[in-house]
Image (cartoon, rainbow, N blue to C red; front, side, top):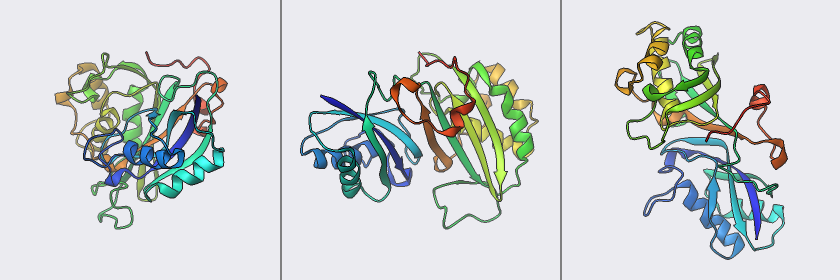
Length: 267
């Protein structure tokens, strides 16, 4: 049995999330169908982190086990031949050192993109979150810095989150603007359900001047989801990349270069 590792990009606008669901179009189902066609047998893929309906990925990482022998190029080109236009396999390689797409990951990077202008975009439809009131980017960045470090993120996780613990370690969070696009980059050892979208919703309210920058830290301390802002729309959210230790031989996104050498996996 050979284990293959793949990087996958997708536009989540027309998907009911990552995970296979009967009767629904999901990223996992179309990817497994395409790979099964190449393999000429059923396959199952395991991802680094499931994404919700409408959420995109710049680089999701998956692995699959197979006895079928194909070159990396054959897997790559074959999968992309049978995939729909809104999913692409970016690279394929052999797994090293007991690699597991989910359990070998040390950190994950998400990006939330906001279109901040009076008119919605036709070209970026369902690829960004539109916010027409002018946002104070510096105020948003300042407010977000209280989230860096080891915290209980109860105020920023979905009510139905199934994680046993609300604690996560946020390595960094940055808010910056390029033209009419405002981007929130977040990196943590793991994320609770809706954590990024709940943080984005809170920062947008702060950016609009509805609350002081200190409100974010107050919410963190209160540990009460009911007090924070509404969950931001899924359209602006992207899984940006997944960080793995060097022994697994997976190239990491440059954004992870700031991680400490002792960064540890979430257990």
